[in-house]
Amino acid sequence: METRSTSTTSRATDMTDKRMSRRLVLTGGLAAVGGAAAATGVGALRSSDEVVETEDQPTLLEPFHGRHQAGIATAPQGHVAVIGLDIASGVDADRFAAVLRMLSNDAERLTQGQAALGDTEPQLAILPARLTVTFGFGYAMFDKLGLADRRPADFTVLPEFSLDELDPAFGGGDLMVQICSDDVTAVAHAMRMLVKDARSIMRVRWVQRGFRQTAPVIEPGATPRNVMGQLDGTSNPTVDELDAIAWRGGTDWTRDGSTMVIRRIRAEMETWDAVDPVAKDMIIGRRTDTGAPLTGQSEHDEPDFDAVDPLRLPVIAANAHIRRARLADGRRIFRRAYNYDDQLTAHGIPDTGLLFIAYQADIGTFVDMQRRIDEADMLNSWVTPVGSAEFLIPPGCQPGGWIGETLLPE
Image (cartoon, rainbow, N blue to C red):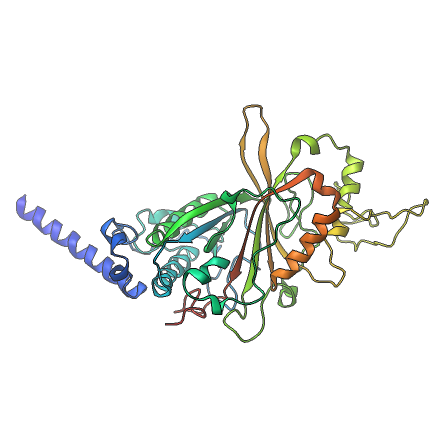
């Protein structure tokens, strides 16, 4: 028994050494600069790094590599978790880059139905259900890492709007991780793996979870309804239009990246419920049942903002939501629309609303649109922004590369 026990222990030690060696190669020696994590078993001593394969594995995989990060132009999945993390004091750019390499490897494997290195529940990685992972950098991150000169001049913190009642618990963050999947289990597992490998140098600032209607509840490509009952995203650009709307050009390290704004918008459902259906149509500028503009017959008809009724009043009011949310110069944002529904008060009043996730090449486009909404949108009486954060989205990477390598080259 003692001999067998010694042999088993030897094999286990050998396997652990191999796993640590693979992790060290991947992170470029992260353990040497983050020894505290190794000492506590974070991100290093997990019991399995085997790729899980099965004949029944579905082909619902989204590619990880490419010019752009996945999770933006990707057809929206049913579930999302967005995480904001803060870099710990004393972390330098090299340590941050090492963790980004590790996180990119985790994301690559998980999105392809493979367990992350050292995954102790590899069976949860088998069914990714179109899992995507998207990374973004917060404004303050550049200062913390001594990279202020690498922050684009057009990437700024959003100004305060009069409608805002922002909770710091849903704002800021140095690193953003957006995890999307058609299976909430895949989202939860990916979040756990990524956070475990990030917490050696970062702390979680906030997590926001959301959901949306997808097939088979609605037809593929159909517009989902939000918790306020409205079709949400009717005028969203098509993927083919994103070169002019979402992707950054130029020749610097951000080329093929984007900027992201996430706004947590509470829906005041108790008062919204009291509004009659005709008034709701006027507030939005669209019919609730079909999504058609008040000047059209079907959802995707172009609104006629010049149309007037027999009294010579605008059919679509000057302060209707669809009018206020448009910029006169034609600039647009690209949205991934999700809802949230976190809890009920003791009196049964929900904390529910929209996770307004917007992508645009220049964050100024979002600011200008939000200013128009803030000034005179009728819908403002029934929605309250309670969280806000902005991130610069780096470009995608090719096989063998990692997200952030254009900013932090080896």
